[in-house]
Amino acid sequence: MLSLAVDQLSKTYPNGTVALNRVSFRAHPGEGIVLLGANGSGKSTLLRCMVGLEKPSSGSIRVGDAWIETANANQLRLLRRQIGIVFQRFNLVSSLSTFHNVLQGALGRSKGPRYWFPATAPQRERERVMQCLERVNLAHLAQQRVDTLSGGQQQRVAIARMLMQDPSLLLVDEPVASLDPKSGREAMDLLWDIVRERQLTVICTLHQLDLAKDYADRIIGLRHGAIQIDAPAHQLTDHELSWLYESSTLDTIETPT
Amino acid sequence: MNHRPSTRSKPQPDSTALPQSAPPRWHRPSPLVCIGLVIGAAFFLHGLWISELTPLRILRGFSRLWNFLDQAIPPNPRRLGSVIQATLETFEMALVGTVFGAILSLPVAILAAKNTTPHPMIFAASRSFVTLLRVIPDLVWGLIFIIVVGLGPAAGIMALTADTMGFCGKFFAERIEEIEPGPVEALRAIGASQISIIFGAIFPAALPSFVASTLFALESSVRSAVVLGLVGAGGIGVELSTSMQLLRYDEAFMVIIVIFVVVLLVEQISSLIRRRIIGNAHG
Image (cartoon, rainbow over all chains, first blue to last red; front, top):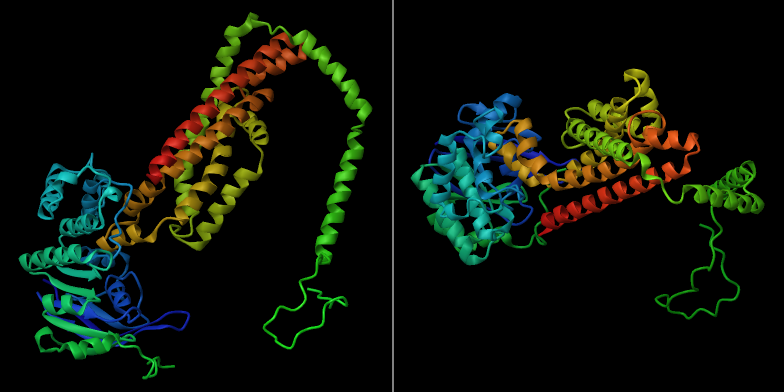
């Protein structure tokens, strides 16, 4: 459980695209937030700023009691260790085994070379990898190369890697976008079970209104990089939410110059 | 672009949507291309002239070649034992030089790849270093290292190490630059250190290509190692140059046959392994 405060966050790319426009919100420990928004609304940029993969143009992000945007390389590493991230495209190392990929979740904890290879990893960590794989029902595929698995299985490997990392704050980037509807639901169920079990603070970007309403405690709607909706999930109607996805031909694109 | 309107074009219809006259058949090349062609042709003709490569000389050369073959056949296996031993030394020189070169190329490639270099200055320096290793021919490295460590296979190994680093350093770095950014980002987000990311995501993804490049380097090293012997850097080349200078063409021919067999074997085996690796990487 880790609190998160985003304050007046803006991001403008060198080509002039405004990805985020003064975004502010606060996530309480244990809260499940879903970020909704059309493609290009700035959801992914927001997540990437939160782990320091991208530098915001202005504004601040506080995780626990540390500031991401001013952290030096070492502090950033320590912060990242506490923030798990599950990517839309899984981002597994495709030439390695399932076991090896999950073991890499521990790389943030160690500096030594023992964690680089399954053969040299400490027994305790090797057992933990198997526990994480069992939690996502993939223990039987531990030795398989990860690029031979199906999309749904790869997503579960990515979730197991996140379990291995053992974060306090979880960021999830469109976990179902690369999956068929059934595997998508399964992935969401699994993720949310884990989130509740471990009482993680979670911020999850989604496209699907129905999924968002089923899983979220709170929904934040982004449009053109700015927060348009921020309310408990049960208070929002479909009509309000679908507005986020309507084409913006009528209202001018909100890019301050 | 000089576009000369054709006088022979048919009368144009009113509609602008229809195509106008066809593009000209011929564009006059730019002055730069003309100058380049003239300079290239001048070098070519001058080269032909200084070599005095006349049909008569070539014809006379054939009779000398016949003379050589006449003395060379049948090849003389009298010294086959020492020839095979020297060939083995050549192969081992190539192997050791290539392995050293490939291993030393790994850190250099990390520094010389845009996405892993710690600093643009280090990037530029390591790229220049690799280029320097490559632009100096292996034979020149051989001569330099003979001065450093004296005649023998040690000089040959060092020359081949330098040569392999010039080749592998470039190819490894280019492969690292092509790596998918996703897994690297994932490990960075986990909080892995740079060195863990290199071993955890970069090397595993690039390994098949690294091995394939190294096998290419090995093939080229085996050929280089033969020639390096001619300047005294160990191996079969020494045998060949001795036999040639003593006009023992039948022994020289034996040496050439052994070289042929070994180089062919290495190339065949290496390409077999390469095909297996690249096949696996795709399957």
